[in-house]
Amino acid sequence: MDKVKDNWMKRSEAILLRIIVICMMILVLSQLLLFKEETRSYLSKVDKMEGEQLNTAMPLYADTPLQIKEETTAVKNYQSMLRKSKVILLHMVKPSENAKVYVVVNGKRASDFIKGNSKITVYDGDYLEIDATELEQPIQFIIKIPEKDLLSPVDGLIVEGSKGILTIGKIKFKNE
Image (cartoon, rainbow, N blue to C red; front, side):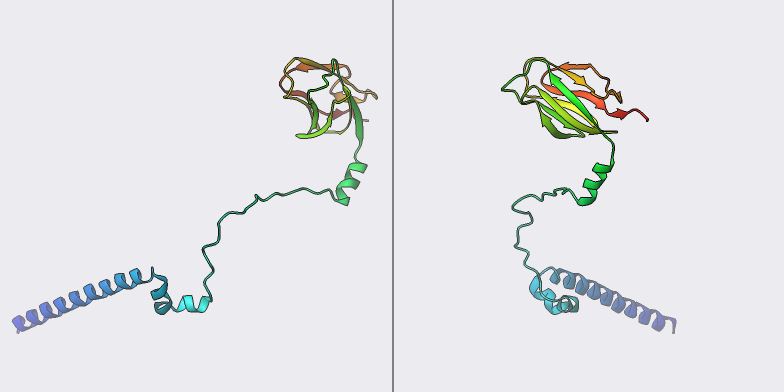
């Protein structure tokens, strides 16, 4: 009886092992068939339910790069009108007619030195620089504060240099 039971167990174990191997082969084969578009539409109900396939032959890049422009709004205009502003005069000691020199406020070009002078309106906390990257020879600038009501920069400050960004610094108003 034990022999019959052992034989039956061995046979059922062999059959079970074959069934497992066959199921694994069917699983691997079906997964490989899902890689192809034609067979996937027949084997998978999900693709049928999702609708039509998009064309993947489209270019994955734009012809022109995306450009985001910050436009001035009415709110920004009113805010700038409500903020206290001061005027700073910048004088180039020996103006150069062919060189392009700019006043830079908060990283943006605000004015130039075409006539050797530049008058600029600044607000508390602005960062002021002079862009002289196109100048070869050394140049000097004198900063004049007409109302003498700024802590920084000071009236009569002389900034000099060439071929680079000349830092004037952060604008600080006197507390009134």
